[in-house]
Amino acid sequence: MSVADAVLPLRFLGSELGLIARRRRNQAGLAVLAAIPVIIAIAVRVSNPSSSGGGEGGPEFISSITGNGFFVALAALAVELQLFLPIAVAAVAGDAIAGEANVGTLRYLLTVPVHRTRLLAVKYVGIVWGAFVAVLTVAITGLGAGLLLFGGGEVTMLSGSTVGMGEALLRLLAICAYLTVCLAALGAIGLFISTLTEQPMGATIAITMLTLTSWILGVIPQIDWLHPYLVTYWWNNFGDLLRDPVAWDPILRGLLSAGAYTLIFLTAAWARFGSRDITS
Image (cartoon, rainbow, N blue to C red; front, top):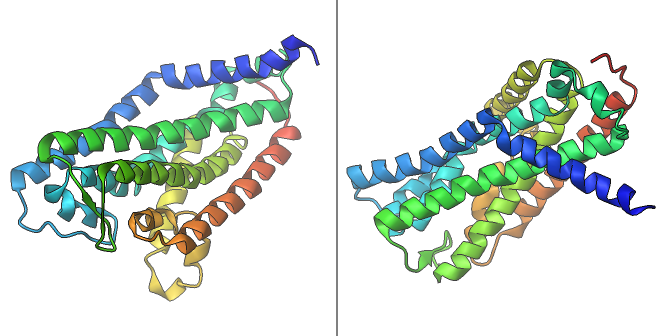
């Protein structure tokens, strides 16, 4: 393999990541994601709730904010995980293939030449990177706003023990990594959907509706046998990374579920895109 052949994939990936970063709608989406933790922190500061005990569930992290601003990041992640973060991933994933086809650049990309498998791989890496940036944006903004308005100090885990801020930050980073893996599974579904259409907005809406449907099905007790197989079911288990010791079983189950969804839908996207006639 020549040096040019080795460098080409990296240049292609760099170009894709740059394109994602430069899109105004993605920049606007990140601004919205960053604004919500600030709104949460200000709202709690103004209302000054008397309760400061920790909770085990998603938005219940809000009740711990007044005791330590660290929990603003967790509360924001829990709130945005229901809709805003999936929409951010859906926007990038829906545009991956359908967007290129819509503006007529897909055929050009494949005549560079770029192998279809390589193109799909680069697009998926871009989706995963976008998911990580989105999650990290929420966490960092929430952490900054929380520490500014409420201060820091030792962090009380969900199990009742306390850890220093340094260890708490490492656990927050682990939470960001876990949620990125979960959202990457949604990104794989989105990439597959993006190969089925030339309308990126339609793909984005379909991915968003699929996510909402999964959340809705997950709260219907009559079909609890189905819940562990839903793409969103294990997402809220990120709180188990804040136990001492860490409750690894639900975390590993969540990673396994995300891995299965990713493998299935990346394979489906490859099979679909590999046999698709490129007309634009």
